[in-house]
Each structure stands twice: as C-alpha cells, then as structure tokens.
Amino acid sequence: MTSHSFIDRRSFLVGAGAAGLTATAAGAQDKYPTRPITLIVPFAAGGSTDIVARLVGQKMSELLGQNVVIENRSGAGGNVGSTAVARAAPDGYTLLLGTISTHALNPAILKTVTFDAVKDFTPISLLAIVPNVMVVNPSFPAKTVKEVLQVLKDNPGKYSYASSGVGTPLHLSGELFKSIGNVQMNHVPYRGAGPALNDVVAGAVPIMFDNLPSSAGFIRNGQLRAIGVTTRERVASFPDVPTIAEGGLTGYETYTWNALFGPANLPRPIVERINQAANQALKDETVKKRLNDVSADIVGSTPEQLGEHVKTELAKWGPIAKASGAVVE
Image 1 (cartoon, rainbow, N blue to C red):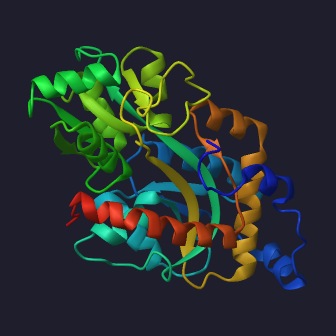
Image 2: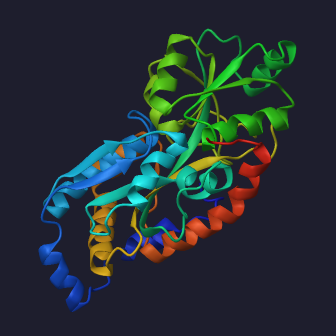
C-alpha cells in the first residue's frame, strides 16, 4: 500500500530499536516490567484489532519476560476501552491497542468526548496498517462491485450491511460506498467485528464492511464472498480481489491502523522499553508471516512518528467523520 502517506516501514525497520538508550532508561529496564501487563483491545474478540493484539502481544510477552494479557473491553466504537486507558495510572501496566477509530474518528463523532486523543495518551508505536474489505454472504445475488450496485439500485432499502459499530472505519466504509454509488442500504452496527461476522456468515445480514484480517479465513473457506478491498491497490494476500475503486467507484478508499498507546505522562524509559519490544516483535519471522497471512501491512515506528501520525489522521478523517452524520452515544 505504497500510495498511502504512512511512515516508510522499510526505512524505519532498518533502524528501529538500534538507537542506544540512556543510562536512566537502561536502569528502568532492569525493573520494568515486574508483573503482567494488561493490553486493552477496545473491541470484541475476533476482529482485526484483536488479532493484531494477540499476535504481537504474545511475542512481546516473551521479550519482556512478563505476560501481556489481552483484555477486550468493547463499547461505543472503542470509546469504553480507550477511556479506561486514558484514566489508568501511567506505570506501563495498562496499555491500549488503539486504532483509527479511537484516535481519529471518535473525537469527531462522540456525543460526549471523554478523552483527548493527543493529550490523554502517550504514543508508543504504530504496528500495522490494515485494509478493509466488502464481503457478502454467498447467497447474495452479486459477485462484483457493479453487480452489487445494480442489486441495490433495483431494491432500494431492501438490503442491510453490518459493521463493527457506529462511527467505526467500517461504518464509514459503508456510508462512503452508499454516497459514491448513490445507493441505499440500512446500517446494522454490532459491538465488534466478531459478532457481525457471525451474523453475516449465518445469513442474518447479507453484506459487511470488515477489516480484511478478520474476514480472510471466511473468504478462503468460502463462507464469505469478497467483493472488493477498500484500499487504492490490491492486496498481496488476495491478488484476485479487485479494489472497490477498480470496480467502478472511482476515488473510493478506506483503511484502518493499529498502534500501541499508554496513558499520558508515561515515563520515557518505559515508553522506550515497550517500543523496543513491540518493534522487535514485528521483526519476528513467525509474527511477520502470520500478520502477512491475514493481510496486515507491518509498519512499526518511533513514539514521535506515531504522535505525528495521529495528528495527521485527525486532520484527515475528522471532517469526513463529521460529514457522515454518525453520532456515538
């Protein structure tokens, strides 16, 4: 996905973790961590954020010498889990697997904003960029973007699409599809991608916009049909699946990303220790293979790069989120 203005992962990964740490930081590393670390995933189990957290978290456990315990705390488009981390003690034992939702979209669509995406968190490391995908139950009478558009135009308001929640990138993916394609679909929000996928596979809802990692297995075994990926370029793990833009919706593009954050004022030595472990985990061949298998684009970053990334994403997606009219109670 070289068309995105993301951090150049090749230039970063060559040197990530190579810089020497100060004596103070080195001393703190001898003491941290001394007990298990809780990594809060602000969405239900089974979605792409959960997948990335568990793959990276398992390797980080080995590198840090303490368990990284994944805790799924879903609700309000990721707001519930994010708020818990923002209010946690800045001691390195409560972290967040943040996303484009928690740090770029929610500030624009939350009815009550309970945190500041920049001031209330300490950026640690960007982990991966994740493409989204439009999938349908195999019984849906369309196999291409053009066919989907025609079915929806012939049956305005008849069909619904599922997403992982109101105001999430997947919700906005569906709304953007409706807007550019000039079609009608009803939105059915779930508390996470996992429950939504279950219903689409079962045929309760015919269409879904999902992160590709969580849908990949269902696509490969034929339980879901991929209509198109939402990125500008095709995805290497599914080269035969066209982009939605290729299918006829010129200019269509959405995606998500995953990153590690701590509460504000997290001590620098602890930030460096976690950043080092995270980026080492991303370089592990097993982790790389498994993330690539589920179509996640490995990035990695310094804390400063992630901080700038969040500011850029807020400026880009805030206006789009507001224009969607989505409101999270």
